[in-house]
Image (cartoon, rainbow, N blue to C red):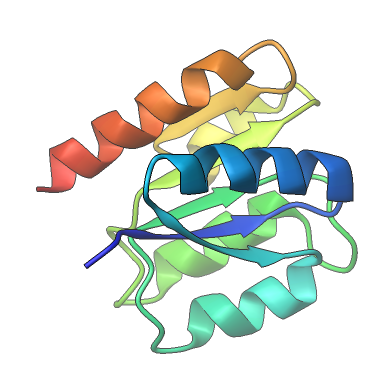
Length: 122
């Protein structure tokens, strides 16, 4: 079964490029363009093996999504990457992300980091 990533990003070009990159690795990617819709997906019983979120999102920001996911029993251990153009590393780590990556400079690190998180959970 392919590993499933929930990816929350409101910038279409970035979302499409990252989704294509992750799917090329054989992973299934479910995208979401705003924080409010992401809350619903996170609360659902759908299986996600990883959450990748931007911080600046319409309606609900990435930090709030991370806080919310960490409060849910079925998402508390879900690996989370914050992939943001804004340096909010300290706030993201305090919220509970496993890894903070900056756009665009850390883009080449995304696939290796995802692979590392998946291997950690195996």
